Structure formats: structure tokens, C-alpha cells
Image (cartoon, rainbow, N blue to C red; front, top):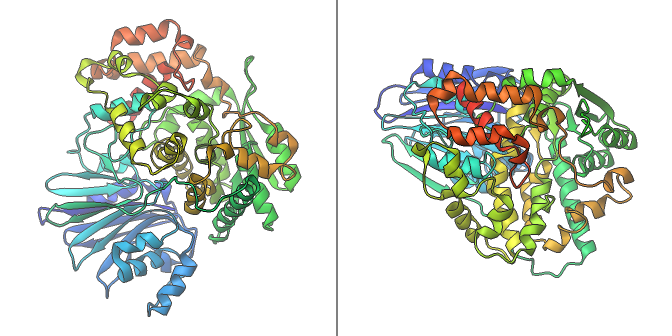
Length: 591
């Protein structure tokens, strides 16, 4: 896991070394162990390394194959690299290192862009082909690893976060993209690729690669598509339970074996992370470290789930670490967490992941996390509502999911940012593209391949990498996703969702964990819009920078402020917080 960046000049001038250094400086926390650069005429590549596999200098980046004329910078982990290495050796390739980076380098030399079909893992990388004078940017199938870029007539810049790009070039267009703003306020901060909230910065789509030539021309290609059609073979409930368990176990095991450093688990106490712990213990993992975070209670809500995470830790005899965050630390450190967001996010548990990652990074360099299970296995309350709805078209989705309908969006923002209902149009197209047997299959496929990318997955990546901590997400394993997508809703929706996971957990996990109702990350200090939290938002929304920007309709802001608890989204998020969160990110990054 690392931070990557680079520049390709279209005007035939040399790449600016100072610009590469500025970008690397903004990536330092993603890769605190070492750094490197490569320059060759119109191209410059930069890398910050977090050493996980092959800790020697032989695995340093940028990595070159001088005979093939290619140079690589890579962020992520390839879980099947040992098998690929053997195949490439059989084809005559010689290796100087023992890690996965060189496997990508040799695979590209052997197969070109077709190597992406063979890579199993999470990745974002750039390959410069000096012979063809072209740069390839590629991103993994479900966008676990980020990759942003900025293109003008003179140059291309790319990096693992937006901050590196913003600080690399004063000429980047930092005006707000109205269509992205519509997405953001409709899909609870999700802005699907290629857009970002800023006009001058875009991101590579998951499961795609882009090829930029030195004359500025670009081509884009999708290399993987998720199908949600039923398998030809008829399967019983037990068949599904056995198949999913075997696939998840394989996913968990490969994510602990492919590392030359210890691997821990972020243990929330929910069924998802508890299954990861149990399967690792079953596989014989020794001295397994688990980590949980909790907060002070509020009168209305308990602030932690320690009773469940403690039960799992005892059951599997892990080395368990609990971290209790006092309420007086939450607000003061919220801006600090936001400073590490590549894009604005509305999930208030970002600060929880940020603070937990700070502690965990002192113990291990790699953790497994349960993100993705709800989206893959239908764990949220809105899925059965969509499944049973008789509404037609995109409204079958939007009436249960959208934070704001189009008319309210127009009421929310200044008229400068008014546009068509671009989000409904986009979602209708995404849902129609999926090969599926039932409507819910389409919804889950779009969630896994598009929506989840820019919500929990990005949040976990940003908050863990802020402390040089690699997060691995077994529930988003390619093979597990492909298997689960073919499974009927009847194996997902019963028992409050994630039926198949609960069935495999009986007798394996503590009963208290299996039988508990669905819970969400408790953050009492930020859940209730009152007191210090309300004053914090007022300061953000009424400061000079916010007034000058004039992003929001003042009448709408005043309406929310009169009684914030009355204005919640369909997913129970605070609409006032959405406004304050975006404004805070803009103040930190573009003012």
C-alpha cells in the first residue's frame, strides 16, 4: 500500500521535478517508509512506500524494466502474485525481488493491458511505456484503491489523492462541478467516477484503464463487468451457505498470507468483522490482534459495542485492544480527519475510523475490515423495501435511497448550481446496464461496483492510510462478489438481511453476536445535532469563506437550523450536517 503520482507532458517539455516532489509530500502519510522518483523526458513518476511485501530495497518504486522500456508505480496488493510469478518465470522472466510489484511489471511486459484480467487484488497503478510513448492508468475492479487525475491541453497529472493534485498545480480548475454537486447531495456524498466535486479533477473508473499518449489523446476501456444472473446449476440453501463460506474463508486467508508483516482485524462486534476473526482463527492464525473503538454514552444511545466485540475476542482468544474516545476529543479532531479526505464525505464514523487507525497503526501495518458485507449480501433496511416495491423505473430506487429529490436539491443550492436531474438519469442508466434476473440484483450490483466505492470503501482507505495503515476488505474479493451476485434475494433478505452470513454463523460465533439486530456505528456525540456540534456547524456555514462562496440557499439553511432533527434523509442522515461537511472540506482544500 502506497501513494503514487506522476506527470505526462503533452507540450513536449520535460516533466517538472519540483511538481513531482510537491505531490509526493502530500502522499507521505500513505507511504511513510521510503520514496522514489523517475524522470524520462516528458514523463515523471513519484512514489511513497508503505512496505508490506518484500521489505527490502529491491521492491522499491518506481520500478523499471529497462529491456522492455517500461516504468511502474503501484498502490495496493495483488493476492495471486505468487501464482502469476511462477507462470511468468515459466515464460522466461527473471525476478530481482520477491514481492507483487515486480509481478505487475513483468506481467505488463508479457501481456500489456490484458494483464489486468489476471490480477486478483486491490490496485491502482501507472505504467509508462517509453517505446509507445504512452501512459496507462488502471484501477481495480471495485475501486478499493483510489486514482485521481487532472488533464489539460499541456499535461496530465495523476495521484492517489486530490490534495497532491491541488498542491501540484495552481492552474487546476477548482470550481464546483454542478452535476457532481447534484450527485453528492442526492447519494449521501457519493460522486461516481469519473467526476469529483471539482471541475479540474477526475478519477479513473473502477474496472477500467485509460491510456494517455504523449500527444494528449486518450482511450478508455472497461476490463471487467459484474453479472447478476442465476447459475445454471440449481442450488439449495445449504449449497449456498457452503459455497459462500468456502469463498469467504479463501478470501480471508489470502489476505493474511500475502504479507511480510503481522495482520490484525478491525472488530466492531457486528457479524461481518466477527466472521473475519472466526475464519482466521479457524485457519490457524497465531497471536491474532483485534481492535475496537467506542465512544461515551449519550442519554439516548449507548456509545460502544464492546459487549459484542469482547465476546468475539474471548471466543477466539485474540489479543484484543479496546479504545474508548472521550466526547471532548471528537469535535476537536473532526477537522483533522476531514483534512485527510480526498473528497468530501458525510459519514460521521469517518472520525471513528481515523482515531482507531491512529492507535492500530502503532501495533500493526495491515488490518482486515468488514466493509462491503451489507452491500454484497443485502444487509440494509432499504433493500427489502426496493425488492417489494411496485413502483416502476428509477423511482423504485430513489424513493427509498435518495437524500433529496430534485426539487429539494434546487432549493438547497444557489441558482448558479442548478441543473437537470442528472442523478436520476445516471442511476437509471447504471441499473439498466446490469445483466440480472431481478431488480434487487441490479441494485446490489450497482451498489457494489459504483456506490460503495465512494462511500464506505473510500472512507476506510482515506482514514486508515492517513496513518500508514493498510486496510484489506475480504467481503469485496472478486470471486466472492461474483458468486454472491448470482445468489437469489431469498438468500440475502430474510432475518433482517445477510441471511446467508447469519446461517453460517450459527454455532460458530457467539449467539449474542449472531442474534443481535442490525446496528450502525455508534457516534452519539455527532449523531444528535445539538449543543457543541450544532454550534460547530453554524460556525462553518456562517464564516466569511462560506458567505463569500455562496454555495447554499440562505433560506434553506435557515429552515434546517430552526429544527435540525426534523430534516433527516431517507437513510436517517442529518441534512444540515451534509451542508456543513461539504463546506468544511472546501474550506480546508480550496480556500
